Amino acid sequence: MVLARTTRLLAGAMTLACMVLIGPSAPSDALFGGSRPVDAVRDVVPNRVMTWNICNPCEESDVDRAAEIASYAPQVIGLQEACVGDVQRIRDYLEYLHGLVYHVEYGSVLSSWGRCGGAPWSPGGFGQAVLSAAPMTDRVNVEYPDGGSEDRGYMAVTTTVGGRSVRVFNTHLAQRRQETVRADQVGVLAAAVARHDRAIVLGDFNAVPQAPELSRIWDLATDTDAQCRPASVGTCKPTTDWLSKFDYVFLRGIAPLRHRVHLTSYSDHNLLHTDLDPS
Image 1 (spheres, rainbow, N blue to C red):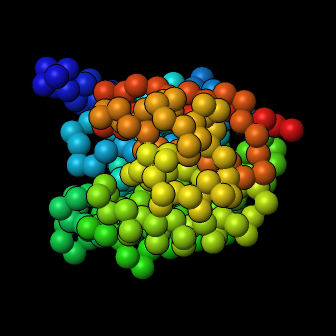
Image 2 (spheres, helix red, strand yellow; image 1 turned 45 degrees about the vertical axis):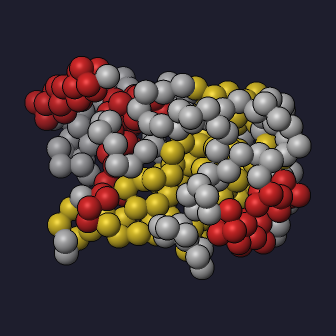
């Protein structure tokens, strides 16, 4: 594992070195200067949305994280445990190494020097982020009244998926063994989701489907995993290294087509993406 991580980090460093030397293919807003290469053009997959807790603090490189996302090229991506600096680099690598262009909005709930690096007078924002191939509007960032052992919240944006406008929520609920706190957080989130006829709710809920604290979300929306319902036992595809389902794509007023969980060595949570019915 150590050798593999060292190899990935060395590969990332070599990629950065090449980007600096090449110049014109490096991100203009990420220390390097230059313009986008003409031949690096690739479209996102229509009607595909993804959620991923990218793990922080972890030793994985943003080059690797971008490559994982590019493998599935969703229209919309919700990231949790996201440092602003990491997301900026991931976004740049998606464009300049993979030809995928995304807009980005942040839902930071914590300014943490130790968690996200930077100087004490300029800490990095930590929380959620949404990347969307289409522009986003009406961003809100809400910190839950009680975050539990760490500040937590949700963010929401309006964007376009499959040619139709939709409200997208991205959240990260309180850590395990804080059921009462999560129940209160779900109440806040559910009240916001209920105001929209078409909504996608992404995130790490830190709870299995049958957990009582998720009931208010289940009342409003459906998980994209057709085999996964709050009363089911053992049929939900796990999304974590400890083989629990904690990560969700909930849909309100939208039908799913396909649901996939992709194993990754770059986080303790796997990538989860769903293709939506465009009708």
